Image (cartoon, rainbow, N blue to C red; front, side, top):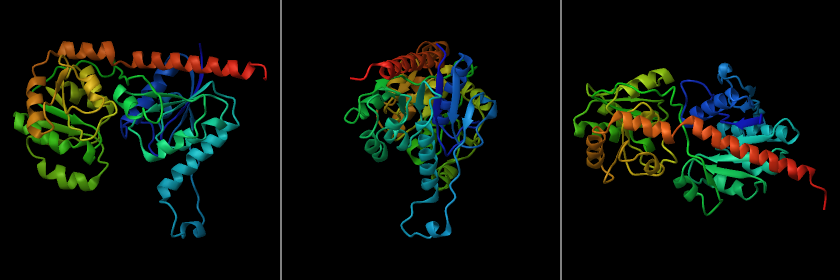
Length: 361
């Protein structure tokens, strides 16, 4: 069944390599896979998104404020207003459109939820994060036909008091994240921000006797300068913000991938990517990571400390790389995830068609 799908992504970060984060990588891989399966995909995303993606692009209109508006002492920050403007314009446009069978909302903005009753196509929202005040507030106004899917059981449980969500675990392209040879060093990848705590990964790798390479965008410059830079040296190297192919090589050549998050990871995409390369994962016992990392594919720290994470690195380094890779292929693949979304899309489109053709009561 060929579907016309509108995917709502971030209006702030372009969908292109090197990705700003896991959400952008998720949107890119899902869109490409849907297109390859014959669906028509239209993507709402920030300007500068990859034109080779193959999707029709809905680029957000830029906000132009008057001098009088900018001088308002109570005005919200310009970036906040730009995002509000972008999503408001999109939802008003979709309200007048019958071009889509389903809308897949992957943004973290409240307006696609709050205004979902306005649009003729049913809206599926993937819950990529724990509850936030803006999203919780918008839930009160969602369309009765709205559908919610969480990226892990942990995330669904976190939202349970607000909304009932199904679970479609995230997936990675196991062809792109191919098996690597392994090595002797540790690796850490992700956004460089305090809640991801790469400084703890450095400390734990050192305690375990391993060199470590870190890669990812610096999203918090103060944190990088205060916590990461002083720890860098011969046995701890920052490789920069790498493209996908470079990351695959780096991760596949590591002995262990370290996930040091100090918040409850909604899923843990970097763990799934590492496992797809055959690289076992050592992580803190947080959020969706508990559902991804098993005794065959890595090790979870027995305690929330550097010593606990170092001990997990030692255990993870003993895992069989072929078994780690097989765990990803069997349970964490992009193919599996997109098939599950396709099934939900089809059910939503059929139910919407029945509602539209039902005789008036």
